[in-house]
Length: 297
Image (tube, rainbow, N blue to C red):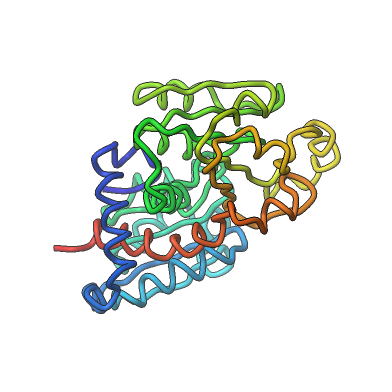
């Protein structure tokens, strides 16, 4: 089974991934080398720090061999048709992780491979990040029925977070300016599992929330929109005043990289409430758990 969307695993599968991630984090030596002999292809169209290092380290921890692939070496869509590249890689790899600009490329390669394809990030979703986010929330032992607030652009991170949050039994509230709301198809899917509310302002989304999440206003590939987005998101910065509207024990979350002074203030990012570097670390454990689920006998 491939992992193109966090919805692919369903609520039970997400729960198992979270439990497996925590177990791996507690006792990594127990799992060291268990995937020896497996080959993990890592195709990156977009630059990366956390995704590249965590996925490579996770594969190495489990004994698998990570193989870097990029646009230049693969020639996908330029020298070769995506379907041909997929069928070639299918003969070499046990799993293929892909960080791409367009989700359609993931879907095209997946359609021509028997080996599972993993979405390491696309313009539609960021499911591996969402697993790490749910691990981070689970570690904080947030009470049942907790609320998760997302403030900012209704982008790929927001999409996966809405799905993962409702699958995990949380109420999800999204605050974003008009014109930057999450795709209604994802909102509808998330509502199959739980309550999702969309607001045009950040305050009602954050009110009483147990976790407050934000992401950059301008994602990679949107640089030509930066000035327009900076204007559109005025008033959506997560600062101390906004965090005070959340639950007293609320945590602040961000998938990184962060632009201090734009989507979040330095004060909040560096505060005791911030768990952003725990999220970053959990990318390693959650990807290792995903590989175990996909490749273990």
